Length: 201
Image 1: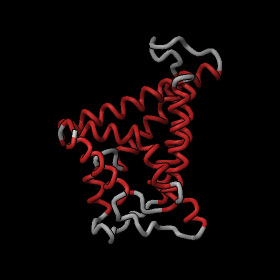
Image 2: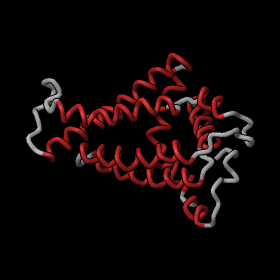
Image 3: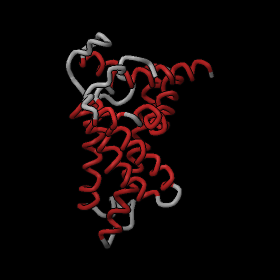
Image 4: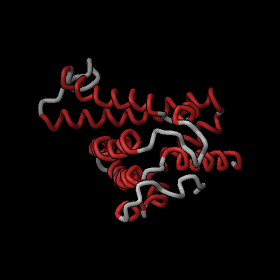
């Protein structure tokens, strides 16, 4: 248990110091985190709606922060190149995220062209039905993305690392709220880069 908690904390600290320098990225992560918390509650009521909200708002905000606002140059604080950080990233680096987001975009198109998903679903007869199918497919995609990378990490870094990463991903919304709730205020003051991004949290 000690190794698990230590690995989890290391992964969280590395994620913050390597990949969350930008106050815009941090603010988008706060929006994403709040949305994901709402999605967690909505899962028990309407899983399809939770997935639609999670992917369209929470995931888009989160990934936009990484793709468009996070600095890609040399990280002087951590003395690491962007390429080095991408190579050692435990979870989804930008290349893997591109693949995941392409799959996300492909789901609604596939269900539009083949509403019955080759016999797996009762074909939708309305826009609402199609959206519900998209939501459920996105929910399955999200679960598969976490499961596949977790098992992959079992082989790359060990079971503890994989389980710690899965736990980190599932609890990131709560952790991000605690970490980045002041970021929008800092951004309003004109602070574009977090001066403490190199510190463990």
